Each structure stands twice: as structure tokens, then as C-alpha cells.
Amino acid sequence: MSALETFFLAMVSHPEAQKKAQAEIDAVIGNDRLPNFDDENSLPYVNAVVKEVLRWRPVVPLVPADLAGVPHRVISDDVYKGYHIPAGSIVIGNVRAMLHDELTFPEADKFKPERFLDTSIKFPEVAFGFGRRVCPGRYMARGSIWIAIASILATLDISKAVDKDGKLIEPTDEYSSGLIS
Image 1 (cartoon, rainbow, N blue to C red):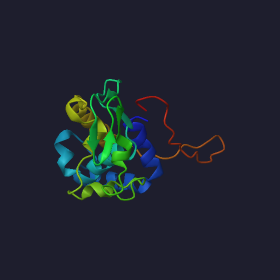
Image 2 (cartoon, rainbow, N blue to C red; image 1 turned 60 degrees about the vertical axis):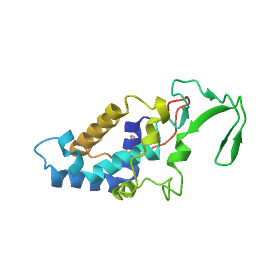
Image 3 (cartoon, rainbow, N blue to C red; image 1 turned 90 degrees about the vertical axis):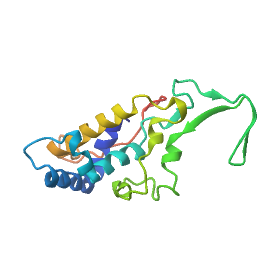
Image 4 (cartoon, helix red, strand yellow; image 1 turned 60 degrees about the horizontal axis):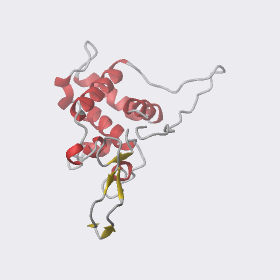
């Protein structure tokens, strides 16, 4: 899923989060204009929604160590946190596991934007990779995601689709296969 697909899934699955973010936008900005980047620091709950979207369902759940589609091969024996990694091993970072670590993110499988209102919990930077080959477009991507989400929340009410008989269609959260979901 893309980050915006995850956002829509989160909003239809957690309408209380949508209403809270919309109320914040209405209180801070009003309804005579759209949010802009100058508003970002004044919208902590919207920021928390963006961070939680990126953490809850990472766009790239398994990140090859070089982010270019080719996993790294360990060239010499290594030890990481007591684990022996023999030379020749293939290393792939499991971003989903990092972003669902229960010690850092209690109830990690739940969509809880409120967790990021606690300033001691930082933005999940690993969502964009790590090391010297971190995504070079991460700031542009995060800004684009933020402005899209803030604008959507300011203008739309997101709800579940209905079938031809008027019954609600439950959304699915299935990923497509591939390196980037």
C-alpha cells in the first residue's frame, strides 16, 4: 500500500481519528482556506496522523540495505547485539519489525496517532530507510504526504464504500507483492 492508501484505510477504519484531525484543522485554520506548510507546527494531531500512517503500514516493509533493490552481502564475519552474522550472509532491513517494536510502540499493530503527541516519541525515520543510503527524497516525500493528508482532511469526509444494496463494504489491508508495496 502507498502511504496515501494507508491513510484512507486508517481513516475509514478509525473515524474517530479522522474527526479529531478535522476538528483540529477547523479550530486552527477555519474553513476559508486550505492548510499550508506554515500551519504544520500548529497542527500536532494532523502531524501525529501522518507519522502514524508511515509507522503503522510502512510503504517499504523490507528495505534492502542499499535501497537500490540489491541486498547487501556481509563481507566479513560480524556480530550484532550478540548475533553472529557470517561472511557471505545477505542483509535486508525489516522496517516493519522496527516500526512494530512493542518496546518503542506499545500496541504496535493498532493505529494510534496519539502516541506521537508524546514528544519523547520521535518521527519514525526508518520508514525512509537508514544509513548512508537513506531515501534522498524523504523530506520532499514527507512534505508531500503531509500537505496531501492535511488538504484531504480539510475538504473531505472519508467513509466506507457501499455496495449496490447500500451495505457497507469493509476495506481490506492486503499488500501487493513486491519490494515496494
